[in-house]
Amino acid sequence: MAGPIKRSVMIAGHATSVSLEPVFWDGLKRAAEEDALPISALVARIDAERIAADDPPNLASAIRVWLMERLLARDA
Image (cartoon, rainbow, N blue to C red; front, side, top):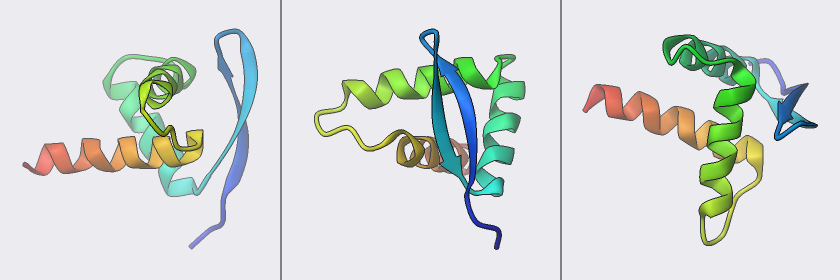
């Protein structure tokens, strides 16, 4: 299993570094393509949901959880 890869993503006009394992980057790319969004727009959406939480996790964790919830919803 490959370790995390750090990439820069634009959110609200500023660059934010996010470290995710390659499988999560692949999942994020696929989800963005399915929703016809740039990756940065999808990450911004996930970030907005994250910030609205009572106890917001870090962005990388929020992305991982979002991707897992999306996958589980498909199987339901």
